[in-house]
Image (cartoon, rainbow, N blue to C red; front, side):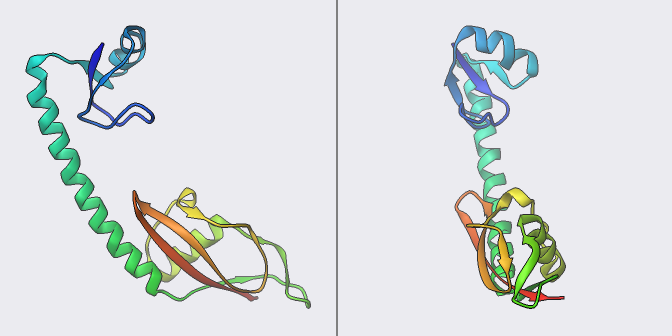
Length: 148
């Protein structure tokens, strides 16, 4: 059964796409939740307008993500953490700590799920992490952990 998606659905398609799904999935999930409409000849115009709106919104979001990327990469980000005499931290620096430091240094608000670290930091020094701002726009976050 062909349906027109009204929302982005992971693993199925994006808003405005016409996709083939099983009848039971459409009848029991997509139609009652309002996530899709039954596709027919007259709905093609609506699908085209949905795709145009989606593409315009994506272009605006990508432009905003590029400016955020430039701001984050240009910023000097410093995190203060409690540390022992040998430079080991009491605890560790995690994704939420980096998000808060970015928000403080640049006023760019991110979610912790957007930050990717190789491992949690347990010592003083300079490190890097990456932040996925938009599909294909990844900022490199350089930060320094200092003792309180």
